[in-house]
Length: 277
Ligand SMILES: N[C@@H](CCC[C@H](N)C(=O)O)C(=O)O
Image (cartoon, rainbow, N blue to C red; front, side):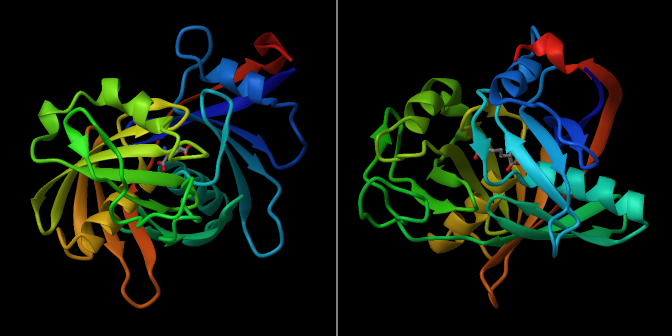
């Protein structure tokens, strides 16, 4: 079964995007994982399926990690998918629905898109954590890192604040922390260095994906946890290996606003049946 796809990215966090709005596509978790494989498939950090818009939204976005697991949020893909739908409709504002909720996205000058990523959820059972602990100080340490803060952006995040990001062996620590028993659904693990009250540097080990060049929801969690710790103001630039996002944790309603670019790398056609069943 031949289907068109689009390869997009936000700051190098890359996606294979399929459009299943007109007709359902037989995309199983196993097929999504095979297509996401960088050696035997097309390769991507997340596999994104656009589905028929439910009432009150312009598109439904389903998110799968390369290990086949489903995620509730993907900030960079939210901007990408919103830009596609907005271009189609000649609109400047669209609503993307995920399994975690509705995300309004607006077009800004200069090829930028601002997504309202919704409220940061700060309760231990929102993250979720395995037991009732203070989400501002998790009892978790490994090698040179300790004492992360956690929150949910529709997906689980923990942020470790470190003095020197370059000294942190992220690829070694990430998988162990992702699977720590304190995270019953696993977690995305961020390592953040505060450069100034308006500037964070961040590297993310993503749940189900590994090291990525950028993680939008991780940047949201990074700014939220930095503000909660008194390390930055509510508006800050988050610099990741793939580039910068402008972040705001809005005081009035606790929503997190994320502004950044979108890009299409190429388009093509793939044979779904060549990727298992
Ligand atoms: N790249 C994303 C996050 C993708 C999902 C994540 N790996 C999870 O399992 O929660 C982003 O830009 O937010």
